[in-house]
Image (tube, rainbow, N blue to C red):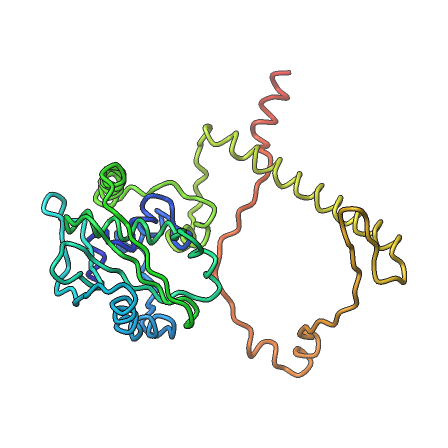
Length: 301
């Protein structure tokens, strides 16, 4: 059993507050309630490297900052709320300060420019400060394997209060088995939670506007796609055999390129298509007019 299931940790708080790019409140809720098993990342190379590089990052932090650190010997648990806990990478020797070590992809370098710190990490360190009762935390980051940054985060009581309120509300939903509202990134989680359907059609009148907006959005997308194709055809007709055109604001190029794709017909002829075909279960959301309502309307008129 994953021990993290029993508490909200530093890596959870951004998602609990709806501020994470990687997880949603519903996904964390599903993991804490045991409805979805957390992805096992232990065999992922970037996770292994992050763990192995932690000691190097800590030593680099000591060298660059002149601040000595030591390993944190324990998991910290809130005295008031036992479901709020955290683990800390390093403690600053002889102080009540702490340090979190991060191995960051080169693709994320812009997020660390100047005084910027990704919100997920600000919340993680702030959560650690709140749980441990400390005042100052550092984030030490190795970026792309060839750049090092460290930044200081100070305790913020207003932020602590917001995190506490969010965590209390979230854990109440965990205990009550009441899921948070789903968002755009939750389609896969929703299917995992509800993989099958029975024959019942529920009457939920308050969702009528939602369905209407969905249908209008799909119609608008079709219109915009048709407009896009028309505008692209117009530009191609002007470019003809040239490389492109330019205006005062834009340069438009229509360049040849080669793409590769599988020939499904050839695979079927060779008997390989069915051999390597992987079937997955899903649920399809389809919308149609309520004919019963139309019949009632016609009878009334």
